[in-house]
Length: 356
Image 1 (cartoon, rainbow, N blue to C red):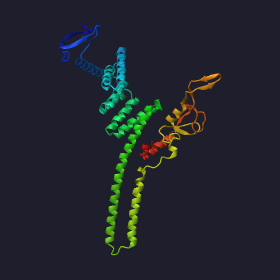
Image 2 (cartoon, helix red, strand yellow):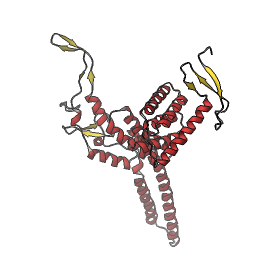
Image 3 (cartoon, helix red, strand yellow):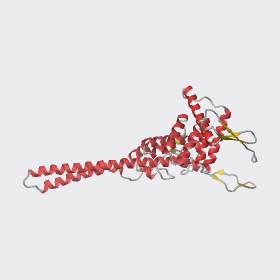
Image 4 (cartoon, rainbow, N blue to C red):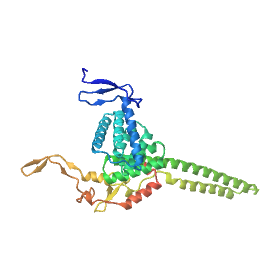
């Protein structure tokens, strides 16, 4: 009683978890159930949600505004817990929000992010798939689903999801840190996929080469057994044929040998292979994110004006880096020809992903 709380026992007829449990009532008249009771309540709520979805053909009826507000508050709690690295508490908060409003994709992706931090990739995959059912344009859901698939060595599926995330991310904010992060993971996955297939190709080529050499040597042995005296010319012919065979297989292996990326496929600022090339009115092609960063540069130092100085920021990068001609972001156009050429080069030379 001294702490402003009153305890009393309740004994409901149909609840094992509530039987002989203790409820706590504060001085304002509201009460809080113990942990077992809250778990039982969550289970009942989920069961009712499933029944409502089933009755309505799989879709949820609109939730009341008050419930939606409560779910948003729970999401904010989850965000605060996440910032403090309290992942368990964050997961609980997002789960409560999902229970109240299961048709909000952000709640699922936020919880998936917590599971990602814990390396619980199966749960990441489940939550991201559910989020994509609700919002097929969720960059985070595609991105984290791609990561989860890569974790279980599904390179094809993971790369497909990462490519979709990159496409959506570039459309929303080409210069964002997330687009760069997605590209780095995608390039690494593409390189690993190429490395795996390259190793298998090299193994097959080596076995085929050895089989061809054995067949030729066996043929020479049969041919030589039918001749009493093997001339030097015949012996040299055999060696020459084996040399030609070596050349054929060396040429076949050249596609997997790293060389240099052609200059016309590289940005003039970063010198890296293009990812999202854009062309300016002057006809020069740049990497979109890098050029946008240049165009948005702001000088925050003092600017001399009539009768004094101004410390207001002013743009200082509104020009083409090469020609120095005035340039605005809206004047940039995708260079689809270069983009297709880059993709064709990468498809044939997967090693170039590592260089980018």
